[in-house]
Length: 103
Figure 1: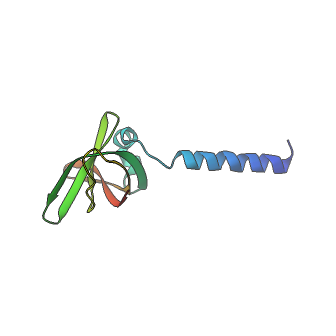
Figure 2: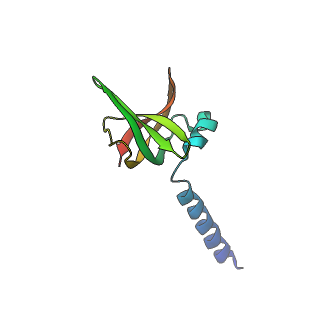
Figure 3: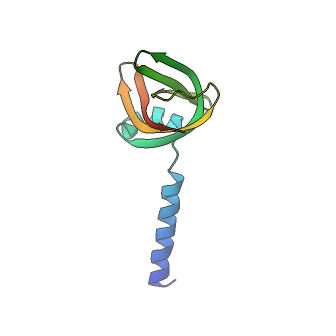
């Protein structure tokens, strides 16, 4: 394999690894919270248990047998499949996602 072919091969492998990391598992966030704190991530799942109290609102995002609270002004319907883009934070009640996009 020539030098240019190796460079192209390495670039393709790195690009595929980057694309594979586009979606995050809730179980990974929970087991490695410190690695995710403050990072912007994308997490797919199912919206459950929405709540709105005054200006505070959010829902629980469920993925397989794991779930995580999401602070969000947008409240999806119960059972709706969504992808949350947001920042991982830790508060008084534990780890949660501060959503800047829910779709």
